[in-house]
Image (cartoon, rainbow, N blue to C red; front, top):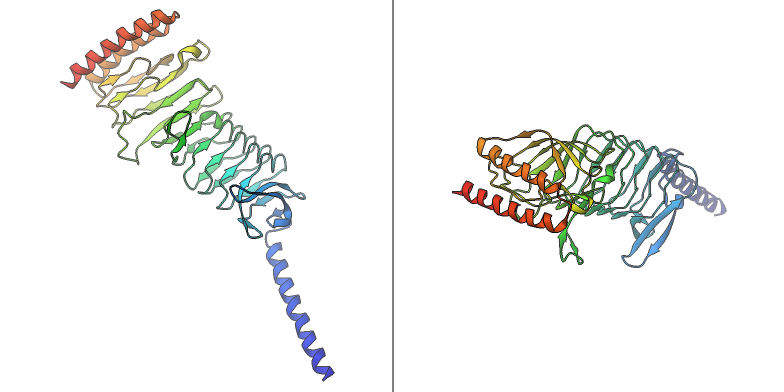
Length: 343
């Protein structure tokens, strides 16, 4: 009888040893330099929304895999500065994280990053000063903030679709990208901007705004900016206005009047106008030096030739009252041209 107990006990030891060995090999499969287990991370519980915020790293690792769950709680945020300056070369963010905090992965050596579809907000400097050459966005995003991907090695950007969020201050829905998010990258390829993005800010004073005057029925259409020089901030190589647009609204591609100086002017090397353009509102290209214009027909070219000299004259007026009066005269003139082209 005693011998039977010994045999059974021996079998249980073998069983638990095998289980332990299997668990270790699974963990070791990631390699010693990979942080992936809950014990590798410092964190804090969040009450609202309910979940876990990752706040830091325990130990030295070169690669991080953010777990989707810790205990029975989902990981929903990566906290400010959580992995700043940790010499990381790789990062995998689990689906379920919805916010990446300020400077979360700043000052590392990360080369590629995939943003899961669950992420809606990327805070300032989140991935700044790495060696990122490729970003993959897997879903929709509400906001990408200042310098989120600054000082990396990106040559082109394919932006995600942007969801519409309610802004109580503006009493409207909005989605926003601050182009300074990509400052300091050697951009020489396309930057594709989804139509669902209603506001694209540069240097706090420059906005490219596509507003309600545009038909949003075809969600596949995009506006493409080529070779935006984020280092200079005020040089745009080419802007193509899509063919479905027939009106260009005020401050479409412009510097705000109060910031409009020689230093803050936009230089637009090439502007490609749409074939059905009927109207350019005064201020649409305020303080914008347009060097070359590609017009698809004589009517659109004539419209531009009427608009642009008047806009340059308007930009040169410093007195606000005189500027408002000149703006009204220009508005009346452009409106008369629209009525003539609509006939």
